[in-house]
Length: 375
Image (cartoon, rainbow, N blue to C red; front, side, top):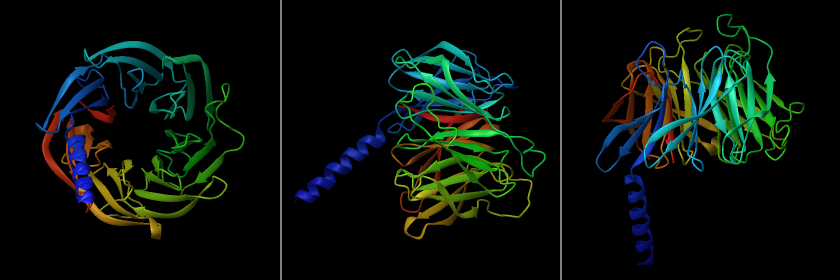
C-alpha cells in the first residue's frame, strides 16, 4: 500500500509541475524586420495558451541570451560588426525591461553567451572576430568591464568560403564548473580550457588546454556534455554530422564516432546547416536541429552501455530554419525557434519513443533565434 501511495504522490507532484505556467525569453535578429529585440512569452500548460507579455527596448541583433535568476538580469549579445553585450533588468511583477549596461565584446559578431554555475563569470564567443572573452560578474550580477580575460584564435580549414579564419561559435562551461569549451567552426576544433572561477585575475588556464580535433570541413557549432561530463556531443554545421567524444582520466576528450544527421545524407553536400543540439533531461535521447532544405530535428537514442547513437528519424519543425530550440525541465515541452517563418512552435516529446508531436501552439515573433527559460 505504501508503494501505491508513493507513486500516487509522485504522479500528482509531477502532473502539478508539468502544468505550472512558465515564461520564456525569446531573442531575435532585428535586421530587415519589425523586431524590437527580446520578447518574453508566458505559457500556461493547463489552458494551452502562449502569449507575448513584454518586449525589450530596441536592441540590435540580440542573437543569444542568458538569464540570471538571482538578480533578474538578461545578458544578451548584440551580433554586430562592433560586438557588444547588453544587460537588462527584468521586473517579474511589472513585466518590464530596463537597460542597465552595454559593454564591448572585443570582437565582431558575438553569437553565444553563457554564465558559469556560480554566476561569477560570463563567457562570450565572437564569431567573426575569432576570439572569446570571459567577463567577471560583480556581486549584483553586473559586468565588471575592467576585469576580463580574452583569447584570440588563429588558423583556418579546408572550406574556403566558411573556414578562412577562426570562428568561435560557442563557449560552454561543464557541469562541475571546472572547464570551458570553445567551439571553433573555422578551425574544426574544440578547445578544452581548465577553468577556476575563484582565480580572480585569470580563471582560464590558457597554457595547459586541450585541442580536440574534428574532421576537416566539419565546422563544429554547438556542443553538449552529459551531466557527469563523461561524454561530449558536437554538432557539425558544415558536414551534417554529430561527433561523440569520451573523457579520459586526464580530463581530455577522445573521439569515439560520428553520425550523419540528415534524412537524405549525401556526402560533400553544400546544403548542410545543422544548428543546435540538446539531450533530454534523462539523457536517453539526443536532438539536433537541421536547417537548409530539411527544417527538422534529428532524433537519436543514446545507448550509453554501447556508447552508441541509434538514429530514430527526423521530425519536421513545421516551419523554416530551426536555429535554436529548448527542452523544458518537465522533459516534455520542446520549443523551437523557426527563424525564417517568424514563429516559436511548441512540440510535445514522447518519453518512451523520443519522437516529437506537433501542437497547435505557435507564437508569432520576427526572426526568433534563441529560447531560454526564465526560471
